[in-house]
Length: 104
Image (cartoon, rainbow, N blue to C red; front, side):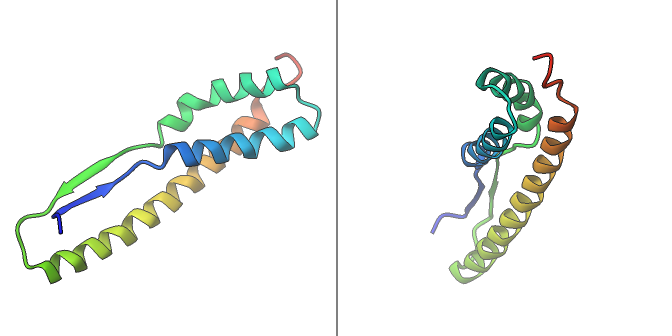
């Protein structure tokens, strides 16, 4: 087992969720495809500020201890991803509210 714990960015899956979460309701509400694309292009730099990737190298240790630490770090990773996703969605809703849909 490697003693490197990775925090992989799940940016593609999260961005796909943002796109789907914006496209369907806004087009149903009357937004054009161009308006949605303009909104997403404007929002993407904000979205990218929430992303990060980090690797932690653990010192040599017994396998059982490394496994326990890895398990806890995986729990932390999941909690951090959930928290970040919540922040992204909160910001997304604010951006949707303030976007000038009529003049775009």
